[in-house]
Length: 332
Image: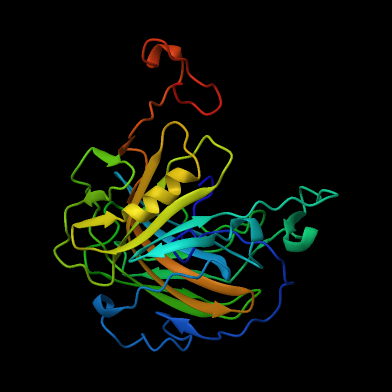
């Protein structure tokens, strides 16, 4: 998908939203994994936290602690609404996976690009705006983090120096506290995951056959799961993908039925498979659901071999007698 979302949520904790609802004093509402938001997880060990990412239709952002390749980062934003064009619709589901598509929303007359977004029923809606949730602190990292929202963008990032890497130990009890700004105060928890290691270099995708995935299992999975997003039409006109949330056991399969349906919707060059080990907890504030995601991911280091398709940048990459389609980037 051109803009991938989680299997029931956005790609990460800092997702952006759409329909604006003005700033105000938000109630904490309900929460899953929030310490003080009614989720009931404040007293449980971090290893027993629920896996509870925000649903896509209520996801207004949040915070991400990323265990990257040679770095650990923290960032986030909280918006005042959800962008309708980024909320995936479910076409099929099997097991831990589902086939999703992004809506093609086009308003006539067009919406003001800088301040509006197209919603359902040919209705232009206010473009979401990032808001302050006050001072945000995170404990359990290699050093404590204190952040305030950027006055221009509303984004949160820790001041220099950069966090040590790795920024936390496996099994760490990570706690985020937002003091409250345009919305009420809230707290969320995370768990220190291990770095994700994919054990293969290529994933074969073909019709009527499940796609096999394998990775190094963690010493302790805790509340973490492995999210996989398969997109075989990055350079096409459709926005479809298979999204899965697997138990973190070291292996999984993307069902053949979903792969067949995805292929039927179209393919183009350079298919991708993104895989993320992550924990996710969430709570509800006035504009919607906010989450804390702790992640370790791979996006472009995994080669996807789609049977019958040769990806290309130019004709030299194609078999004799074929040419490279410049937009779709496959040989024909």
